[in-house]
Image (cartoon, rainbow, N blue to C red):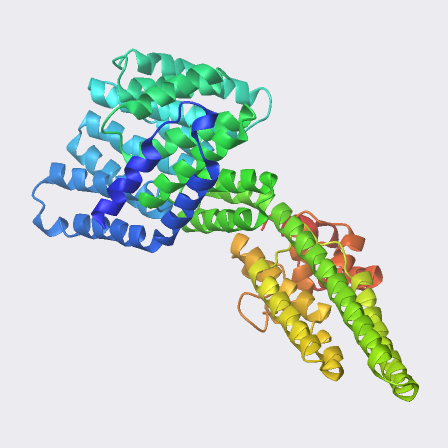
Length: 530
């Protein structure tokens, strides 16, 4: 197993000389194989954590205890926010007791990293303001400036509002210039810092050179490789080189998976790129995995980023499935008509006029049956509605059902069991699909907003509160306001999605608002805060 991991490291560490040297499809296959081993890498992470926890009984002295806290923080910092924060906070308390300025800087930088990774930038700036560099050695001064650079550059990515984004980049550049005075040119830290500054200042070609030179160095840890290759993927996307963007983002996702990193953007960006490329199935898979990681780590800004793209991909996937369903129905109808035509010809050639009359009656009956089936298909197509961008549907389950239906129809036609054909076709019901869609919508919505039901009920007095009949489900009233929470406030669109009239939707909304403890005009504002 160790040999396999080493080979995988070697494969994904090769830096391509040009777009002609990469095979995006191959690296995607490598990523899929790596994701199949996700549980194994997770177990490796747990073993490392267990080993650190087992050291506590044997630790002598506060300095050893502090170092073990920092090691635990390092393992958790890109894995689970709350645990990383706990050990960062413990290290601050211990560093204060020891009155060690170096340890205080390291502990506060750890806490700042936790906060910015969770999207708590205001709190991160407040905490980094508590750091004093008096009596601090060069090693920990470098750590302080590295943290300042990361905080300001990350905040510029999060806050795109003018002039705050430019101000954050400017501050990041100032801290970068100071940090570079402590770094030796040609080293890992120097290439990394230069590459980040060049990227933030849109000097993309220079940034590519810096990052590629870094990747050529020996001894680079897996997490650093993940950050660098993810940055290269982002740069190539900006430069409209989709092949290299996909290649490097897939590399980054492999490194993140190997290191069990949960605070990551590579898989989400890769899913977005594959969606634009037309690979909707993989796009959904990767974006949902990135949502699982964001929920596990509890990174707020990552949830927002994923929440912006996942409904769009789901909507297109649903439209594709609907189109495939319609195409299949037409193909089945044509196939049935051709087979019937062949049967009619055979009857005409082989049978006498009397038998022909009987055959014609049989054909007429079959045609009537087919027309009824086509009419039902036409009605089903008429009631299909615009798939709301915020709803979700499981593509693989639907395709499996369609394949079974197609095989059943094909088998009935082949064996000429025409009487059973109608009942076979009628097994597909759009209402059942809609029910499944609602179930998938509820489950995925509650994954994005796990506290929705609880917070929704807080808007009512206890006697007026309601709970869904099943776990991971919403009531009709909750579903209406779940759509509003996703930004869909138009009653007509909500009615189309839930298959109600606009009047019914407005009645539901008015009834719910009248029962709540909140003023009717402010109720939807409270919903948007959940």
